Length: 63
Image 1 (cartoon, helix red, strand yellow):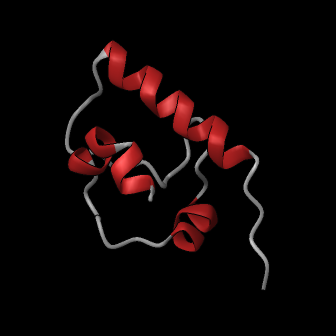
Image 2 (cartoon, rainbow, N blue to C red):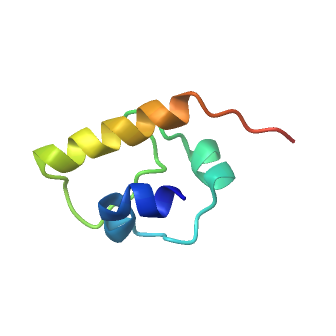
């Protein structure tokens, strides 16, 4: 699960109950509203966020 692979980002997330579909709707790219975090990220956390965004860029939702 993403909450395990990106545990630090999950810990910093404001809304931990959001689904992947909800994050997609909000926009998970750079500057997307899906990334509501409790504080500004440190450099290494920014790298982790970039890794997560790259992974999600290849993700397709099916209805």
